[in-house]
Each structure stands twice: as C-alpha cells, then as structure tokens.
Length: 109
Image 1 (cartoon, rainbow, N blue to C red):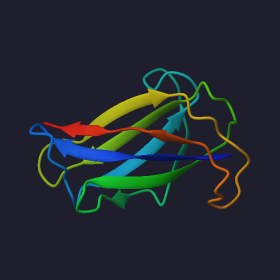
Image 2: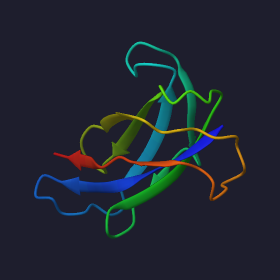
Image 3: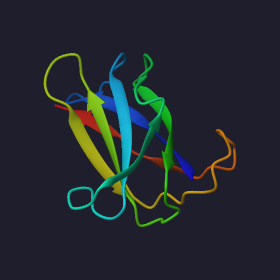
Image 4: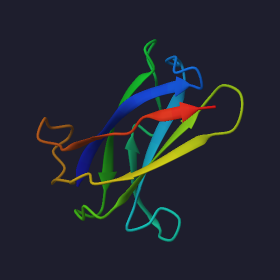
C-alpha cells in the first residue's frame, strides 16, 4: 500500500532550509510503541531551495490509524522527527496520482 508525504523544512526564524535530507516511516499504531511497517521510497530525499520535500511511503498495511514519522537530518545538529496521523493508504500503484497525501512540516531549531 502507498501514500504520499510532503511538506516544508524551516528553521527557527521560519526560513526554508534547502539541502536537508528527509526520510519518512510508518508504524502500525503509535510511533513510539509499535514496530515500523513501512518507509519512504527512496529512503532519503533532499529538500529543494524552498525547503520543500515530497516522498512516497510504501507500507504493508492499509490502516489509516498508522503513525507517520518524518525525520529531517540537518547538515549539523541532531535529526528532528515530527509525527502525524490520518494518511489513507491505497493499493500500491507505483507512484500513481491516486495516492492520498498528508502534509507534515518540520521545524529545525
């Protein structure tokens, strides 16, 4: 099953951060209490000059109760995770326009 995660990575001054690597993961229920059941394809993508990213998540479950974790890896400092729910996964179609999407923005301190 698949879905799309997109968003913008910004800094504490609300300025977009280009060149930040981002990955996305899916978990059966809560991100902190369950096993990972899916991830982004490709695993890492890099934000553009406006801080934007877009990734497809491939998962083994159609459940919309999945927790989505987006992790930004700034060039310096520690990775920054943000969690969200509500993405409705659909039968994998190889990047089909039918995929549901969810916006997850990441603020890097």
